Length: 297
Length: 285
Image 1 (cartoon, each protein chain N blue to C red):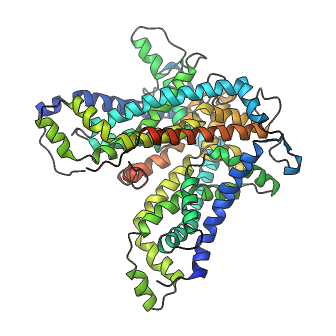
Image 2: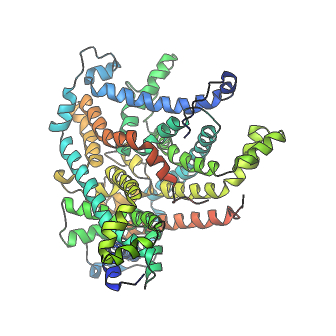
């Protein structure tokens, strides 16, 4: 086919502009900004003053940021372990020859389709509600005291539980597609050899899913790092230390929020860079530890 | 999925009982939640607090929907989200489809870099780009709905371009040769012949773009500067916050249902397509 240079240029130009304007320029500027003292986000570059790694030093000494990082680590580790374990369990159940597979898959994936704001509102206003919520109704039916699910102590875990519930479907679909890629004769051979289902899971399914598990760990890490919406919906008006996460801290630092004395766009940029470095680190470590070995089967 | 009806073998089903309990319990919680919210959207605040949501003692309060839609501005939020979703779905296709086509068909200066750029752009977190974009928008005085439309288009270009590139690869080059013999210019060939040929992929990617724009929250929150450009997610958050003062919980739940419905209905009709699209292409082992 003849190369039509004018056409190629016209066809690719808008995408190149998009990449430069939406990604390359903003990312570079954010990285640059993290090394400068920038008070207002809209101030001109000439008003920036270079201060090296001071923004980074400052945020790591800031109590709000420390708490948000602790919450992030809990979400990433505890939430990640639970979500991926439940998703894998669901995927194994739904590929085991159970009936109504299609329906269950669709129903479990449903929370990923609907507006997360609507979903979070349902959890806050119904499931966890103190007066008429589902959980307290269940407790009362069992003759137990009502519990303040959204009190300071429990709020973080309530938020995490709701978030996990909504996330499972996505990872489940990924695991299902992985399990369906494993040839069935492996399982048939194992059954003939007398291996029980549990043994088959640990000796066949899990090892062969290594590559997929790596992928889900990376996806989860991106998800946990950019965690924002659920925190906002569980503490809608005022940021609370029980639910603060790095992105909420970033938002408050850059755009102002209750308890933020001075806005600091430079510090916000530093938070963004730190979070991005975390994602890259997880990616590199996961790729190293869980080499998929390019299994042929 | 198999359409063949299996005879129910009760002995065989028995060993699946734990499995049924796990997935069934999960689905049951979702169902109870949706059912209750729907019931609450037709009840008064008093009934909700008394825990008598599904009794409808005072009848069905459809006026909750009217209140939410008009008095609480949900109609504005809804219209905005619809505009954002539809306009950006169309805009994304106009930009990304031609790019996907030339990226698949030709090697040219920078084509590899653009490809890698698109893949990396897909995983750039929003927090790394919003700050400079915000200051750009302020300095250039861009505001209103057009700002969010442009941002959403650009946000979805990388995913859409990468997704469509793989599909153009499945098309034989003989289509273009035939079109050229008939005197069709290469550009026209693309719009009239090639793009319609990958229609199924275009539909799937558009569904995903629609869902993602409809449900987008973070950028909407940052770039929404007035009531008239507020989309559903941010609007719903404002409603929840003002509920403490107005106390009209019935209307709040009606608003939740209104926001929830469009993507839910889309999902009812397209669930198979959506589910197979989630893992198609993107995930590798």
